[in-house]
Each structure stands twice: as C-alpha cells, then as structure tokens.
Length: 395
Image (tube, rainbow, N blue to C red; front, side, top):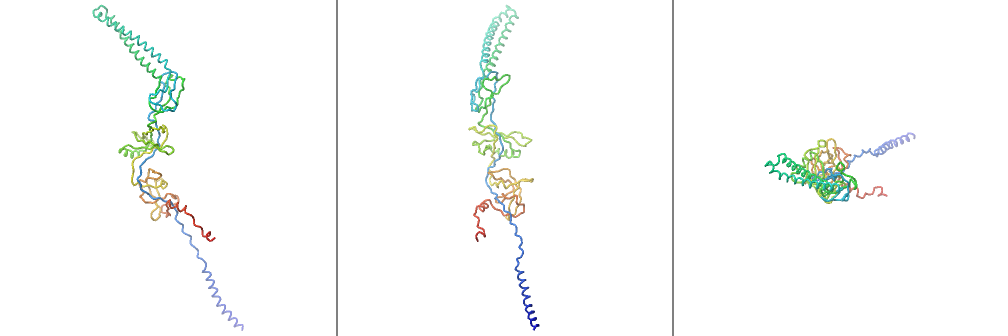
C-alpha cells in the first residue's frame, strides 16, 4: 500500500517538474531584451543658397567734408573797429561789405599826400621852366655851365619828389581802402572774433572772421593702393560717381564725382588721397563732417551673393561652410571685399546654387552630417501650430 502511494507520488513529480522548468523558462523568455541607445540626430543648421545677381560695384570709405574755399577776414591796417555789417552764421555774397575800420586818420593822410603832390608838382613846373629858359643862354655862354647844371638838378629832384608823392598817395589810398572789408566770395561767414570798438591791426593783421564756400563742397577719402589700381582702371571709362551717406544713414540728394587723385601715397597707411566734388545747393553739408563716401565703379552681372553672416575669418583668410548634396559640411575658402545690401559679393570660391551655413556654424565641423533648413522653412516650422501630445489627447 505504501509502495503504491510512493509510486504515484513519483509519477506526479516527474510530470510537474518538467512543467515547472518549462513555465519558468517561458517566464524567462518574456523578459525584454536590453534596448540599444538611440542614434543622435544630425544638428540642424540654417542655410542659404548662393544666388547670382547683377549688382553695382561700390566701394565705401570714411570721408571728410572740406570747404572748396576758405578765407580769413583780417584787419590789414591799425584802427578801431567801427562797424560789423553782417549777421553771424549768415550767407554773404561776393563784394558785400562786412567790416569797417575808422577811416578818418587814413583819409587825412591821403589828403596830406595830395597836398604835398600839388606842392611838388608846382616846384617841378618851375624847375622845368628854369631849365628851358637857361638852356639857350648856357649854349651862348651867357650863364656858366655850373649854373645851368644846378637848374637841371633841381628839376630832376622836383620830378623825383612828384613821383614819391604819387607812390605815397597810392599807399594812402590802399590803406584807406583796407578800412572797408568786403567778402571775397559767395559763402557763409562765421562768428565775429573781434567786437566793434576794439583796436585791431596793432602790429599784426588781426583775424576778424572766416568765410567758407559751401556749394560745391569737397569730400576727401583714402582708398588703399590695391583698390586704387581697380579705381584707375574704371576711371579711364569716364567720371566716377560718388554718393555721400550721412551719419543717420540718409544719402545726400546730390551725387558728386571724383575730380582729384593725389600723386603720392601715404607710406604709413599705404593709402592714396582722393577727392570728390559734391554739389551742395541747400548747404546742408558743412566742412569738417565725417561721412561715408560710396564710390561707384560699374555694374557686374552674374555676381555670386550670400548673406554676410555666412562668412567667417581665421588666420587663413575668409571661409564659408558649404553643405553638399549628402548634407556633409565642407569648409571652403572664399574671396570677398565688398558688401551689397547686407550680402557679401563673392569674387572667388562659390558657385550658384550651393548652400552655405548662415546660422549654427559654431556647432558643426567639416565632415559632419547636418540637417540643413532654409530660413523660410525654419520660420514656417516655428510659426506652425503645435500638435497636442499623446497624453493630452487621451485625457
């Protein structure tokens, strides 16, 4: 009886043990395999295409306005300043009266010189009459030769005195004329440096005011020696226009043109002085103002353009990061000297249609794969309404 029970227990044991291991193995097989880490997505960068466009070739320089003519009004004779006949800072016309120094002393000196001339002219007339009277008598020996020579000497002395008197009169007239000062040109007069009632011209020519011509006006700027060669090449085809850009970014309404290029260069800066003459009928440009002189050279067709922020620079020069058809980054050296409407004019290194990175250059290196997006695509993606999350949709 006991043996039968043992046999039955062993049979059940042999049945359940394999099932236990089978079930245990099944539970072990249900465990999830360890997941591999997700691959990192390529960094997203903003790109722009190289476009071709006909652009005006312009070079901008820092320029300074200078008056075409500048004249100092100075007192050339000594005297008290009697009148100032202009408003400070006003426009004056050529030959308009601006200052008057007391005239009385110089008028008196002129009158005295005129009287002395009349006296000496009378003496000369008498001396000449004496020579004429005694000349035939001297030939007939009725008077001595010595006496006759004395009359001729007196006549010469009287003639010299008359000549000196006339020179004195001329000087007195000049001095009297210096008492009235006129504007030598059409221009704008500054403030008076000496007030009425002060003594001027005492031992020196006292400066009273300054007049400058404002229309036209000069703008001086200094291109480099390398740029000068390009400028001279285009100057052979005609006059070079120059736009004057003011400090607030506005453009002077009147366009100037280059009228002077210096014949020597500055060895320290390796630049050459150049000048443009600019019409200034409204007299809005004043001398001594720093402006931007934009020199126009020519129209250049099929010029590659890229955004200015796409160009970087290191010790090797300027470069851009190009994204090829496989979205790989390539560093490309470029040559660019000028900017047109916020875009770089590329002289060498890029072709039309190539893509350059404009935003995100600091995140990538040559050879990396990137996710390029145009600025318009990125803007549209940011402005698009966001989809609700899975959790919120369930809720």
